[in-house]
Image 1 (tube, rainbow, N blue to C red):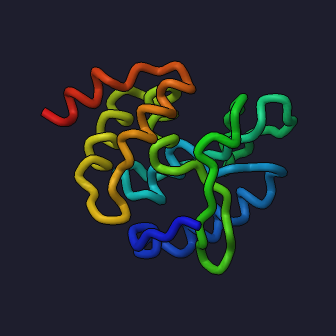
Image 2: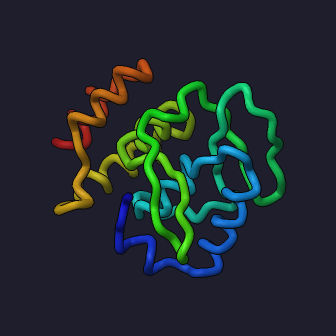
Length: 149
């Protein structure tokens, strides 16, 4: 189970809304902007809670929940403890690759740079990042080279 001090310092009301949102979507997994926010890899505050579901699952976005469909919801899936609840979430490496695939390049590059600055147990696993990139058919190499120079 993932434990990170960064998300514990954020607004409790934001997290209670996220807990409610995830539990309202069967099979939902915290992803993209919401996951970047939890991992403290963005300065953006999510206007909606980004929740991933399996591609063939039926669920609709609402005013507070942004549904995103994924073919592979097991790759990089982990859990966090938040306000006494266990939430499914994609790990930071999967979240960064998904940011490049589905969000703006600017958001993704900022997240990658912030992740590369983390140390200790919050350090980015570059091997895992590259393995996910390969599995999801995204070439992360040019962005890694740029971010590391």
